Image (cartoon, one colour):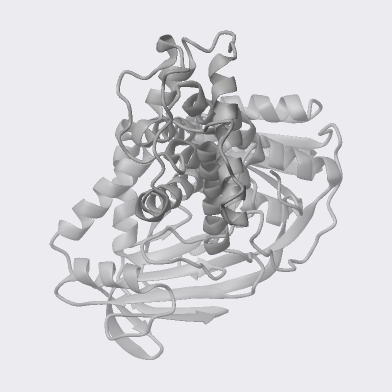
Length: 498
């Protein structure tokens, strides 16, 4: 921009724009002349790595590999925000303001990119993607946001440093990226935004150093690191690591000397601990250590930090439990109980999980079960004999959208969430239709109802029954399922942990 440009003949709005562009150009030239210590080797490479969002997809993959729910949610939210920002830039932003790229004469050759972009300059797509990803991550997890933010800032700065954008291009792109992240949050609230129902708060001991807490950990779940981290946070807690076949005995021993019974493992291990805690009248502390960890995550206990905080302050609630009674005895479930094809799926998953991992084993089990030549389960339900492919009973109402996995927002609603997929010649199509339709659909193929007690009759001997990831055969006859309202006291942080 020429410093002696005559602005007197221009309208006021045009004058302001011209002045702004003049200042923008001068700032660009000042940035080109300024020596950036140590930036010559870093910023051009960082700028190239962010082409087409490659840097952010790689960052999201690394976060997801941490295998904590908070990191995975932050990664997904960051990518969703990036996608919205990129779509806006490419469909509206670049076409609305056709601004030429800066002249590279003031920029030292060592800074310049080997391949210059050919699109218009305003706004900066790289800055928008960086800001969108970093803001999206931070909205879900401020701690991860603090890790990503310096990288995002450096990417945005690199666009001015390498001479491909004016400063205002970068600022506008960054503002658009931040707006995209907040738009995504408005459409899909973060975990901290989700309104938690007023659950019954329970009286539980506050253990600032963990004295009186005995944690039994299932060694087969690979829980050693989490148990050590919990012990570091609560140094006076006692921890016992044992093999799967020793878990029940160790839980009984721990219950005899503990003020609080703790458990670390998958849903099956947690189920065993809940049964012992309920029988001994002890509060339960759950540290997730398995593949799915449905109960712990629905409690908003995702790692040792969440649990340690709740134990230190005595933060606990009462939750429902489900009970089933057969001619063989009775059992407890905290998550789900099912008959039909799902128990077979659990068996296949357990068969392969130690070889290929939990999620791949679950997918493989689903494919094998749906391809198998089998007959629907015959059950007398509501006084009528019915063929069923699946009968699912949830301890509390599960909420889901489409094929996404279900979650519960209230673990003390006093309800059993019953879903049925009726029998037919094509189980795969009916199961898929039920999954897509959602939890409250009624149709000839599938139905849902919420009750507090359920009685099933006419079950054939040897029918497998799955509960909380465990499978047992039913000797036949009748199965009664009921909700036990507010039966169990469990620790959980009463406010979201960021």
